[in-house]
Image (tube, rainbow, N blue to C red; front, side, top):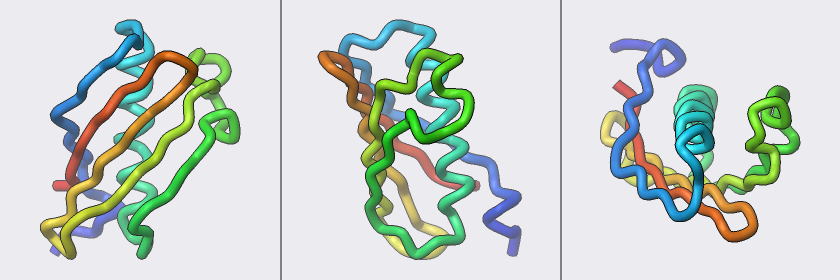
Length: 97
């Protein structure tokens, strides 16, 4: 069995509500990194302010918060994320492979 820390995050079903293309790309990358870092935790749901993460200010995404939830168990886990900032939001889903 492959270690979850070495797994590759795959995202899909990204729905954008008011974010520009650059924000969508940076938020998608951030979501993938969160999947990898949270993969070995028992977390089911968490809320994060991106201002607390290094590099988000330079990318212009520090005003967003992320609510992330895991559904399913074990190899069938799926993650759902909601990024929100002022009048912009993005919903995204992903898995680890």
